[in-house]
Amino acid sequence: MPHQVPRLLAVFAVAVIGLVVARGLLVPETFGDRGHYRAAAVDSISAREQRYAGHHECALCHSDVAETRLDGNHRNVSCEVCHEPAARHVAAPMDVKPVVAQNRGLCVLCHAYNPSRPTGFPQIDSVMHNPRVPCMRCHQPHAPETPVPPTSCSACHGQIASQLTVSHHAALPCSTCHEAPDEHRMNPRAVRPTKPTARAFCGTCHAGGLAGIPQIDLRNHGEPYVCWQCHYPHYPEAR
Amino acid sequence: MADSADQSGHPPSPSGSVDRREFLNDILGVCCAGAPLLLGIVRLPAQGTSRAYDPSEHLYGMGLDPQKCIGCARCVVACKAENDVPQEPHYFNTWIERYIIREDGEVEVDSPNGGIDGFGRIENPAQVRRTFFVPKLCNHCDSPPCVQVCPVGATFITEDGVILVDEEYCIGCRYCIQACPYGARYMHPERHVAGKCTFCYHRVVKGKVPACVEVCPTGARIFGELTNRATPLARFRRFNDLQVLKPHLNTRPKMYYANLDAEVS
Image (cartoon, each protein chain N blue to C red):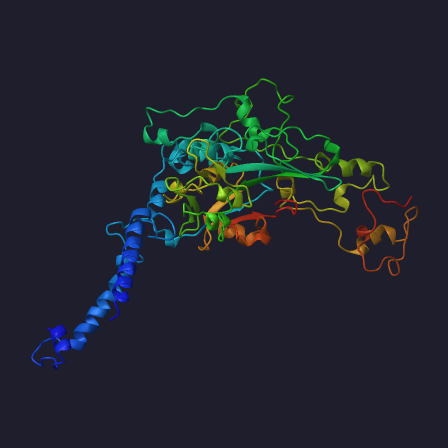
């Protein structure tokens, strides 16, 4: 065996041993147990303290309030939204008491008018709406009453209503052309009113030979389209 | 015995209970099996760490519905309380953005203090075409750029799909903050490590929902399993048109936005 070989082997042995020792010193314990990270970090993150107990915990003792809440419009509003984090209260119910929110400032966080909020979400102008009166004097926060649903279409569709009043269709009630289920007033986006889908529907007046009403021949006028795809019925252009 | 027989050239003793070839094969096998273990490449599973929570059985995601978000920022407040996020502005695990799209197509996005102090009046309201709120947080990507760039392995994706930061191991180099295309990370001013949404991992492993989901009063956030069909999140994913943020980056986010406006990124 040439004498270089044992030397080379010795050099390799030192390198390998050095690598193993360095790896043992530098790579932290539990690194690589479950992936390219310290498995112990997951355990320490999992052991962090909880601040929010969750509404299921609240309901274990406050079952009466929990039941009231389930019936009202705040059924999806968790207790700790208004009563602050309560994990410590759950751990020591007698020693730590959560805050009972009373002031006007809290309710307007959600219910002050903001144009970016979704249409239909109950909102007030907190300056004009019974100033200085605590909200809870009129509204029961655990089961607030359903806001009175709008009775007329113009409550929400004001722009259409004002155009309609100066148009030739002013005398027609909305129900002439739209069928609005009651649910539409509560849930305006999910349940939508109907629109005329057949040309013959407009034709009952505009192709029926009624005097004083613009007439067309449905057979050769705008064939592939439903009338309102070209004409705006709330403010028809023909005069 | 086998060695001496080999060197002297004598045939192996027939009376020996172990055949030489068999013995050498056994030695080779033991060496091959033991070498990776000695080099630390393979580790045996740690003994006595049987846990009730098995992360490999879970995969978490979230559904967000901007059409339900009222911009009350209770989620931001709850997140800061639950996770000890610094109270000062610019440190957020989750935050609310207000989008204002003008009649001329101009898009304005703001998030004053994450939305905690409310949103100011919209200037020139007659010129607004549409406006809405969008909740934002870490997207817990399936292919996370932040994890890829971490030089020490301090940020990682768990088996249940959550991106976490090992605060004891993070060197505070800020690579991940630069790499995140969603701006979901920040440098913690006191601990000097990267801070981010943990999906409230400490709550999730105990079967609870993240704090932001717990307090959302309108149900704009839905947390759940992505694998299991019978969850509110599965229902949400079945019944909504979904979009993720910046899909062209191929980060494969696990935050699913319902009916998202094209202007949101």
